[in-house]
Every structure is written in structure tokens, then in C-alpha cells.
Length: 422
Image (tube, rainbow, N blue to C red; front, side):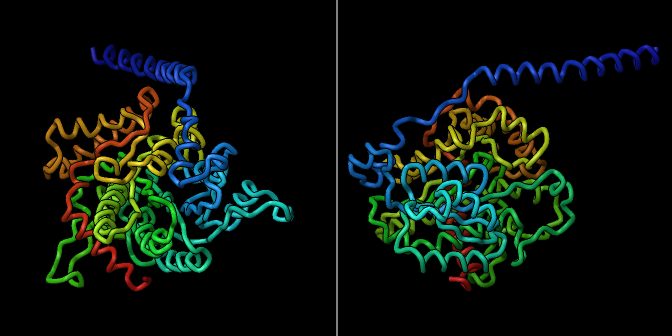
């Protein structure tokens, strides 16, 4: 009997191994048939109205002439897509990246050859290592010395740990200042850069200069507990949020670090927004989720990269829609109902599920990894479903992201951490 059982189970596994690739091929064929959504042709005019461009410059297709836009991570993924698109509308791009050769290639691709005397340079490059706060501070100072004002800051650069890095959680993975690398690059470096460039944003003549936080709906995976600053008697004795620890030696710490950093960006945006409003500033902060976009976030080679290139939004197409709407729609960042933009109505499904199951605000879903498993499962489903509900629109972020005391305490802690470079 047992021999019969084992032979039938091996038959079953053989069938599965034969069927699985066929099912994948059929699904991929179906996706290739279903066209990608396009960026709205109204966007250039929308951009022009946002910056008060003349009807002549809107008609000429260069509504962003003379508008300075700073972008981190502009040499690949969403960053290069945004740089190309905004440069194409006439903007001057302040490109902040870590590779001099890639920055040079971007400048040549967009501005043409440096020997051409007739072409005005509209890509200015700045080299910075976002893992190192000292390097970020230096580049912030360089930009302030070179420009009188900027109208948009896009905090786009980001990294996601590979499976190897997550499974190798016992190995330290820290920035030069000792912080978790994903937390340092995705969140802390941008916190410092934002503080450095705020004076330039405040000097913009535009109606509502904006800071764009490139976040992610994946922030729903985090219940926010890793961002809590447990306070002592004052900020000097408060203990840092767990998410910042570069040597936590914990699987969950490493696996959650991307989600924690993306939640931190939204939380930072809200706290900063409140401060700016209190100061009577016209600068606004908007967080965005671009959805699944064909970038190097899952690695530079291999099957997962091929899958993203086939199924995800293109990084020079609809993958930019939520960011561009957040930049140029009149209400973007006006209040908490307009400060988080997504690229697909499908992304609301994860939030609705977490709230309906009563998982928000409870400790056990994180303690046993249930919220993690649910979020990863949804992320995979959303990769396949996002394009069938493509709409760049404001959405709600996780309940934890609206907690004002978490927002303000994290802001104070972060400001204290970067204060030596301000």
C-alpha cells in the first residue's frame, strides 16, 4: 500500500512540475495581451498650472521651464523615469546619486554632449552616499550653495533587503553611524536632506512647493511598534526606535526593515506637514506608493526581475502616475485626506483586510508574524491585479501612520540624531 501511495504522490508532483510553468506562461501571455495603462495626456498642462506657467510655455510642451527639481536615486528605476519625464517638460534636474559614472551618463542622455555650446545644461549632478549622514550633509550644503531655490524635492532613493540579507539576519548590516542600512538610506538620509533643503523650498516662488516621500503600501506590514521612541526624562536619554538598530540579530527586524522605513517616511511627512502649517509655510509634504514598478528592487538579474519587467508598471509610464499627481494636483498634501497617493485602487484591499480582521492596534499579529505573512501574500496578489484597477488617487495609509505622538516623537529623535550636521 505504501509503495502505491508513494508512486501516486510522485506522479502528482510530476504533474505539478509540468503544469506550473504552463500556468505561468498562460498568465504571462494574458498579461502581455492586456495593455498597460498610459500616463494621462493632461499631465503636462496640470504641471504647468501647478507652477503658474504661461499658456505659451504649456503649449510649447515645456511647462516646467526654470523649475528646479531635486531627485535622489535618479539613475535607475522610478528615479530615472521621473528625471526623464520632468526634464522633458523643461525642468532642471538636481540629480543626487552615489555613482559618478551613472550620473554622468544621465546628464549626457538628457542634456546631450557637453561640447554642444548651444544646449543649456538642465541636469546638475551631486554625488552622495545615502548610507552615510556625513555625505548627505555635504551634498545638502553643496546644493544650497549652488541654487537659490527649489520647487520640488523627491525623496526617491531606496533599497530592499535581498532574501540572502534577510536570512543572514545574524550578520550586522549597519551604516557608518550604526543604523540599520534600509532605515538609514530610505528614511534617515532623507530626513537630513529634507532639513537641509527646506530653506530652498521655502524660497520657491511657486504656489505650493512640495516634498515627495517615495513610500509604499507595503508599510501596512509594520504595526509601528518598531518606530516607537521609548523616552527617558528628555530626548537625550530616550532610547532609539528598534527599526534603527544596525545590529539587531533578529529575523523579524531584518524582514520588516523595508516596511518600517516606508512607514517612517509617511510618519515623518505628517509630522513635518504639521510643523510647516504652524509656521505658515506654503511647502507641502505628500507620500506616494508607486505600486509594483519594473525596477531593480528585487535584484538586478534573474527570474524576479524578468517577472517585474513583464507584469509591473513600466518605470517610464504608469509607474510614475501617483508621484506626478502628488506633485501637481492642486489638493496634493493639502490635508491628511490628500497626503498619500497610490497607483491602483487594488492597493486599498490590504488595508481593508487588515482593518476588517481587527489586526490594527493589536500586538499578536506582529508577535507571531501573521501580519507579515498576510502583507507578503497580498503583495504577490497585487503584483498581478494592480493594472486592472489602475488609478492614481489619494488613499488612506495604515491606522498606525496617523498616530500623532509616534509622529512627533520619531521626528524629535531623528532631528536629534542629525543635529550635528544641521
